[in-house]
Image (cartoon, rainbow, N blue to C red):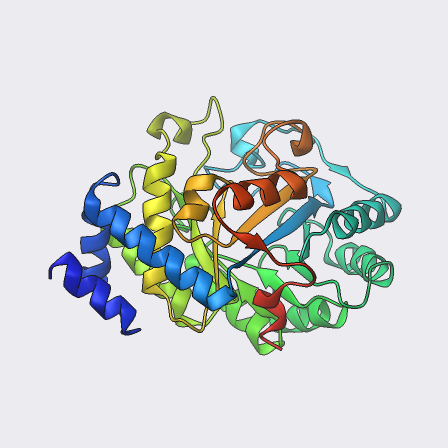
Length: 333
């Protein structure tokens, strides 16, 4: 199929096959065809969101070596980056959440490592919820959960969760992909909106793998999909595989936008960059505390962006900013 036919199909809102997504991913990132796909993605994202990009913000309740041993993660026990657990207090969690709210984040994410005590997560989350404005969107980024836990996450005051089946889940990670998929189902059935992503993309991932993951992310009508490249953790086995360019990531972000249903209004990328925004990303994250892509204990001293810096990146890319609670999550309710 020619590029004109693919773009016409996109304009008509028709679904793409795996083979058609592979074709779009196969173009060189700097080819005229890829730039046309990025332009189409930008147009769709702006139409769906009213040209209002969103900045969300995440802080971590803990930092700990994790036995899930995801090869791309700085928390992985086998990577030896962090050797002891540290936790923040409820007071510190409230302070971080309120600061993000004050900074203008459209949603506040609470992250933990996979084995953080669930009851403690709920206890601190309830305290955070009590200290935020009622309209502030609270999102959980936690490990896999059974149905009863998913319901408790909802009852603790969360609007949604972030959860993804990572590329080569079960091979590059110690988590079976079926467990990740089961958790997504559990969260959805509990009444939580699920945001997801095609991640973490590395040079070794094939176009077929990426295309299949794009279709999976769109299959459960998430709050948003998108794409994120893998950030190498120095000294790890996976770091030797390298990193894709921002331009390649922008291409994948754009193909993802074309490949998921129009009912999915959000299209994320991470880490924040102008190329991603130009290619149709309308969601970035600011971060503080622990970060699985950083070797610093406090990512705000390393790779983490602020709400303000994310907003500037969007403005530099021709986007206006949403003021107030996230529409990506709120529109689901």
